[in-house]
Image (cartoon, rainbow, N blue to C red):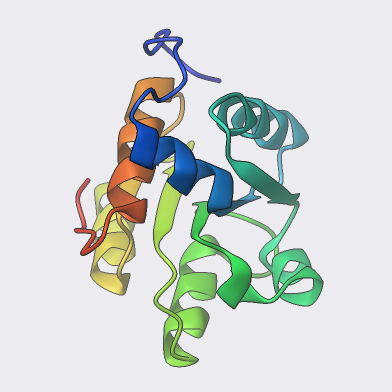
Amino acid sequence: MFWGRGDGKRNSRRGADVLSAASVISVLDDDPYVRAAINNLLESRGYNVHTFASAEEFLSSTDPSDTSCVIADVQMPLMSGIDLLTQMRAQGSATPFIFITAFPDEGVRVRALNAGAICFLGKPFAASDLMQCLDRALAPGHQTTS
């Protein structure tokens, strides 16, 4: 799933460690292996991770306001990740979104970023790239990038 090793270290910045312990990251992907890989990576970095097989499961299982960041596959059955982001924004949520996809189409990337995504990563991606996106998403005044 991931290419590259990343640094293999837990974030050693004291403030970031406190933030990661308090942050709930919701991972949405219909592929159980992708969910497990991201879950393991984030838990190894001290994050509290909740995984969901679909956008509908996420919406029915949790209060989205309890989530510090959503990492979602773009293409999922029934409701896409972008549709979920659009719905949450319409309800007033400012929860940061990071999109991952096996089909990194430029048009979809532009749509995701225009909808308010922080990052858009094509699978496979480096663990370090995901962690940089997550750091950006959880930073005060986060900014959108690709």
